[in-house]
Amino acid sequence: MRTEVATIGDDEARLLVHRAGGTPVYAYSREALRAAVRRVRAASVRDAHIYYSLKANPHPGVVNFLSTLVDGFDVCSTTELETALDTGTPPESVLFTGPAKSRAEAAAGLAAGVAVTVESPSQARLFADVAAELGVTGRAVVRLNTPYPPRAAGGPVSPNQFGVSAADYDEVAAVLRGSPVELAGLQVFWGSQYFDADVILAARKAAWERAAELAARRGGPFGFLSLGGGIAMPWRDGEPDVDWAGLGAAGLAPVRDRPAEVVACEYGRSVVGPAGSLITTVLDVKVIDGRRYVLVDAGMNHVMIASRLVAGSGRGEPSVRAVGAGGAVGRAHVTGPLCSQLDVLAEDVPLPEVVVGDLLVFSGVGAYGPSFSPAGFLSRDPVREVVH
Ligand SMILES: Cc1ncc(COP(=O)(O)O)c(C=O)c1O
Image (cartoon, rainbow, N blue to C red; front, side, top):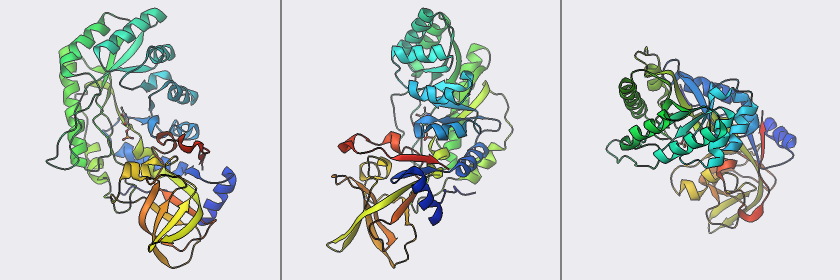
């Protein structure tokens, strides 16, 4: 199996631009979303509930469509919470995550009846306090701190600020025990953008074992356990693909001795990344010292993940093609319209001859797009988004 990235034909690209009223426009493919959910489900622990993390793409049309395919949502703000609930998904299937919630966010989560993650003793006290004040009961999912595994064998693990340290777990459990908020489950989110099945499977196994140990200590399974997600979004040309076969084979294994009634995997980028294309219009073409620059109307204010700010230089380039262009293929640097040297979307990529007004389509950019980009920079118009 391969990660199939949605492609848009020339005519379809032109029509989508008309439909959206112009460029730049993100187009999210329902068919590709459906295929992606199928793919991650087959790559997860058998019978796992699949949660979609809105942080990767909170577009209401995308979330609405995904509500028909996934089992729940991971949200990280009150706005994401409302988007998830607006799909008609029951609150029991929504997990309000985030390392440090404000009092207002704690109240919103508890009032909505969703499960809330708790990441420290003081956050546990906050939830206990707010639930008592509101006169409600609540469900807490304790996130366990875990260093993120190395991307390459022998590399360093990555320490991080997320979750409850092993030393603090008992205190968190004690605070919740004396409160209206039940300790309903655990979350072990251990990182993102991993291709290697061995790394992913080892992280899942470690999470499972920690949960089993804590379940044994408390004398019974938890209601819920999130084993994290971690599956990568291959979106740069030449990048290795996810080892779907390795993950799929493991997913077929029978599951015994569950430490929780519901075991979930939470995914963002691997669901929406392959489904999204960004259609842009060429605004200018010029050659400087032998380098061809193609300037388009989307910039890092719309697609920061492709810019030098995030991707750096020489780390592989996003897949980009020209609509209807037939000229000889040469090399080009595709840059945005912003006055920043970082506003480079694809460096030294093969591209046919294009002229002002031509359309360029970036593929596989459906995750961490508009909501992850500095939209306010230069006070330019927001990017359009359509689901097709
Ligand atoms: C707690 C949590 N869940 C889910 C995700 C989504 O991860 P990804 O988009 O890599 O699948 C993240 C990403 O940061 C996260 O922190």
